Image (cartoon, rainbow, N blue to C red):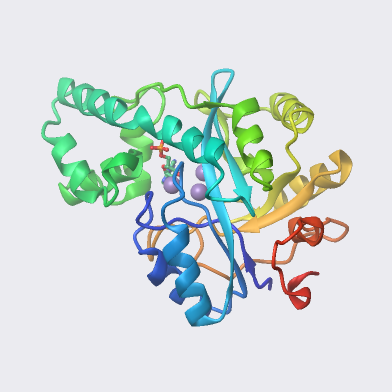
Length: 295
Ligand code: AMP
Ligand code: MN
Ligand code: MN
Ligand code: MN
């Protein structure tokens, strides 16, 4: 079991726990180094830092940025970023900006298929209204009895080809990597096993093209062990990391009790011969990592 959990969400994006509650839960579950990686928003980090000091764990400043690459949406996690770096702050604000309009379009599209009142309902779940997203719609549609759980809402309403899906333009891959790297952070391709082309998983040739561009643009890491990967995918993406010279990351992608694939903490070890992403932090000046926490 690893003591690192480098991907999770708080109420600042689409998680169910406040940054403080999240840190407390992580500490309770044995996490020693936690990265808070809210979607397109850095505002939870200050609160999480105070809580991390209180609970005696190491907080890594993180973010998960939404990217449009070709016709795909992909996510890039920034680890050890500087949340005060102006291009990053302005960059994520720009990525967030379209969310309100997109939410309106999603609600209009659902209304056109006979499901009304969803916008108001979804906003009730968006603790940070600027960060309204599909998860908030999903929670409301569960509450209103449309589906039994969040996962089935996604399957039936919120993905390509379904009534609540609206295509959206997120950040550009080169810019997003630039903001992360410029702030001193490490750019990590999140959950490569989750990407889709229409209804099918993104094929390996496309994923390799994505990784090729990602690396060329300064991307340095890939999530190998993550909440939504199978053990076979740990091995597969571990091999990608080794062959492409990428750092390997691990994170639960926890959003809330009972809602996520995995709870905070409990992650299997990275495959052998993977260079863990935290090895890179040794070289980040002023990163403040205690030596004992560096593998
Ligand atoms: P958005 O950025 O608004 O498009 O929302 C993306 C978020 O929706 C992801 O970060 C997940 O939290 C959630 N999500 C995406 N697909 C699924 C799914 N199939 N089941 C449950 N949650 C999902
Ligand atoms: Mn999410
Ligand atoms: Mn993601
Ligand atoms: Mn995530």
